[in-house]
Amino acid sequence: AKPLASVNEALRAVLEAGTTKRRNFDESVGLDLSLSLDPRKPLQAVRGVVALPHGAGRDVRVAAFADDAASRKAAEDAGADVVGGEDLVDRVAAGEIPFDACVATSSMVALIKRKAARVLGPKGLLPAPKNEGTVADDAEGLAASAAGDARTGEAAGGDAVDAVTEAAPASPTAYRPPPGAVTRIRELPPQPAAPANARDLHARQAAILDKADAAWASLLEQGLEPDANCLNAFFAVSARAVRKARARRVAEAFADDFPGRFPDARTERHVVEMLAKTRDLPGLVDAVAAASPSAADDPELLGLALDAHARMGDVDAAWDLALKLASAHAKRAA
Image 1 (cartoon, rainbow, N blue to C red):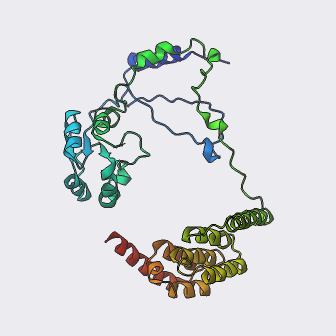
Image 2: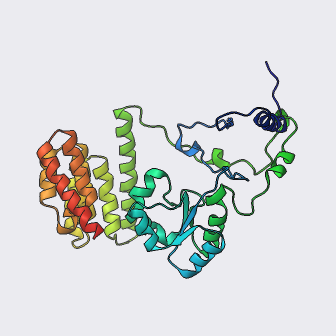
């Protein structure tokens, strides 16, 4: 087997190969890292951003979305090519994209999503907190993003690549991460395995119901008065476990003991969710028809009912629900 090369030797070989022969295509380098993680487990998924000290080799036009004068001035001073607020959002929504990357203040994110998400999203340009370096909370952060991450992939003030290569170990086998340098992901509590079968699922639901009963008994013993959130949370345990008889008993008892606090729009949503899980289409029709004014325009409630009818092939009812859902979204947007 071919012996392993050190990090410095590998980098040197890549640089030499890129200069000894001219090729008519853009060369790339692949890097595989063995992290000993299981990507099937959500707590062990790894994502991150790599800073490129010299950018991607092309000029990048950067736009900064800001709604206050201080942030706009900071972005302009940092070298942003396009700076604007709602006016720039409207230009983008109309199809004009005079930039290759963009950053935004956190106060502009909602407006950008509402007006321009359909334009920027497919191009991977939508500013979002999960996209590191695209959203800043203040003028200083916006300026740093405009000057660094967005333009070159380099965090402002980042270390040079020379310092990284000089600190690389001479031998890959001799490298050991220093204390605290490795993520603490292994110390996170493991996720419980998915239920193996219907019996396992039923047992887990029964255990959750027992815990809910114990919590409710403790609340009453302490003389505490449950509010609407508490009542709906307790009812939701039965509804989501699809215990129809229990859910009905709880709902009737709460309606008698706590009028004015139960039921409410959330209760109706839990009922519809339970009926949708059991594919009780007649019950769904009655529940949607009898929904209170606040629940009748609830997109989540209508979406649950629509999904159940569509899956069962009830095209007429699904179409009516789709029209109601579109109207509900339009009212929300207005």
